[in-house]
Length: 115
Length: 117
Image 1: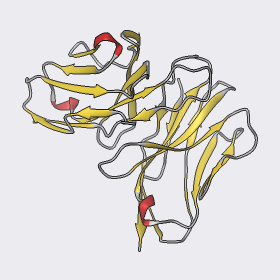
Image 2: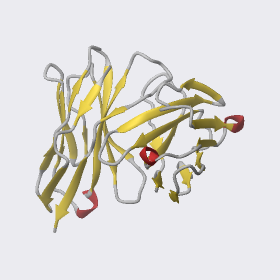
Image 3: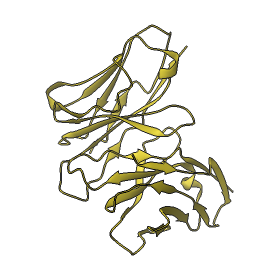
Image 4: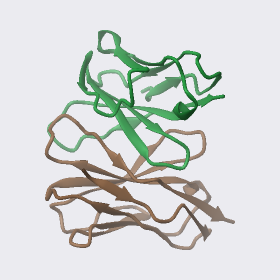
């Protein structure tokens, strides 16, 4: 079974440009999460999808970030325009919707460097 | 809001020895979950071990075990018989049990573990 896959694995862009990160969750997982780790700091929650609906987007830093989940399958996270402080690792995770005992599966992360 | 603190940015241990990674957290909730995740270089972050706060017994998974001290809000990870494959970034994480369907995790800053051959 394929795990959570993220693309691109690394991206270097100039300040002001746009970048789109993609996440393919594990098949059948309705929950999809985006997290971000700025270097040296903790991993922070960005948002949570249940299928195609945004359940919780309280962690989104500002309106330069736009997340979508088309048809409840893959998700994209667009940063436009990118700023220097957006550099970091963006993690995607997915899980099934269950009562308890759920396991969250993470991707390898997309490393973003804004120069 | 909950916070998770990992006070050891880096740790190293000789192969086959035992190492303990520290984690403390702050919460006003009584029911929650605690996790240790491991991220090897350029690889996926994977769950190492989890602990339900209502369970007094410390969780164990083969060479990995935790020391869960609820009153002290401490959740340390012990790795016994360290192996080269244990080298990774280790993250401690907290999740509230209050929100069904939302497994939002609060992470610490991580501890980079190096295994010395």
